Length: 181
Image (tube, rainbow, N blue to C red; front, side, top):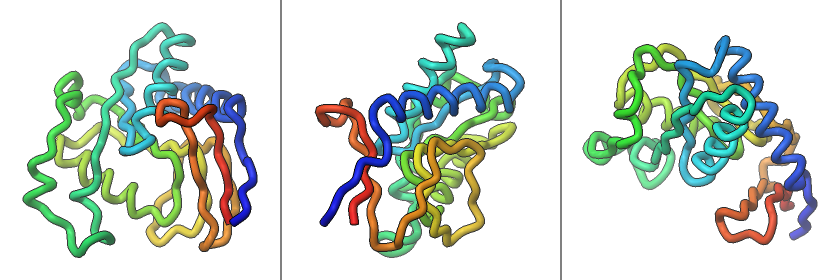
């Protein structure tokens, strides 16, 4: 299997800062904005975006973590509403979803099924004023009509290729994005 680097640590940093700037600009300021990272790497990326927003705007943007596993309809059988109902993110208590624009943050957008599950998980906590989507990598191949509002990089891929995000928070020696094929 061959691997090629498609983003370096500096490329990732610039992309996340740009995503933060775009989110604030589209929202009309940082107030009333929250970031929801889709587990596993989304919360790390959301925290980095929030830090960039705080550095520029002087506003602390809440960051929550969404575990979408029980909301998935394409893994291990059907959607499990009982397991899904048991998940409540304690961070969601720090803001009123009805007056908050939530930016879902994910590492790689592929078929769109993870984002669909994240929307279901988010709605179980209350309906936000608006929901937007930010992804570090958009690799195409959508199976659902989902389009990101903020993209770090578009990377056309073959369906059998894989995009791997390596983060220092996960134990990698350096941040990078690889295309494996």
